[in-house]
Length: 75
Image (tube, rainbow, N blue to C red):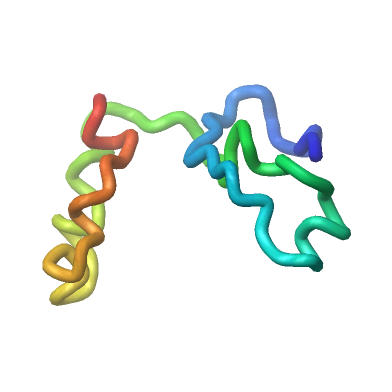
């Protein structure tokens, strides 16, 4: 599946080899999210201040949200 409606200046995140359930396969086909499963605008310096471990709901970081390496922290 190609997401041609996304502007070229978006970043693509989280490749996932799992194509999902029967409905996802019927809609998009095998391997549809092998390159990415989500997209968003380019991150700017300072974005790391707004990750879940800094501004998420109480307990989110302790539940494992902070263990996911996000692109904002890679800046």
